[in-house]
Image (cartoon, rainbow, N blue to C red; front, top):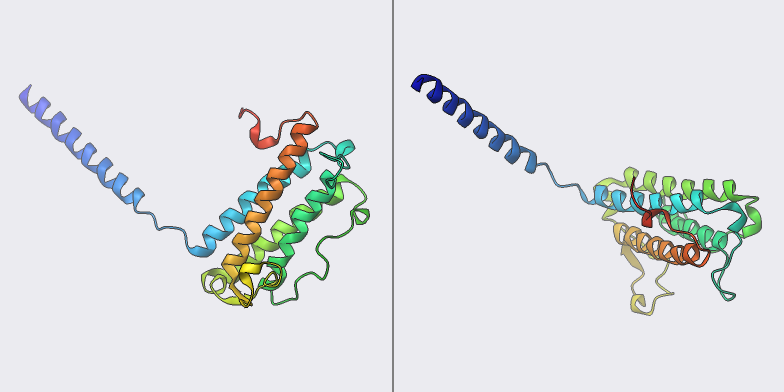
Length: 194
């Protein structure tokens, strides 16, 4: 009986030790690289805006939260269009010459959804192609003239430009959440999880 107890105790000790080693090994997974972190944030805000673009009723796409605001569609187009201020610069192209394409260029909800998806996919591809080294390079800041704090600073790290546009898309997400609420709807991220 003592041998069985000793054997069980030894087995338990081995199992506990092995689980401790496995837990320590699992917790030492390498931290994501800088470009992986940027990509993760880019994809997350893209997921949220895409969910809204797909979810908002088509018959409300030209709804305004207030008379002085743009429509849901115009705000969604704006969020997607802004992404090209990052993507074009990342790919060595000129930033867009106009901030937003006209609403009339998009025949229906499906066209806007496709544009939103493409804008985030193009940005994600640019981030992947640049990798860690590329995301750290200096590029011409397309907003240097627009932001007084950036006066005289004509260059920005590409990763910082990406984060600025991720933040911008987060702001657009917040604005569009108001459209949902004013229209009597619940934004996808605010719904109970099933």
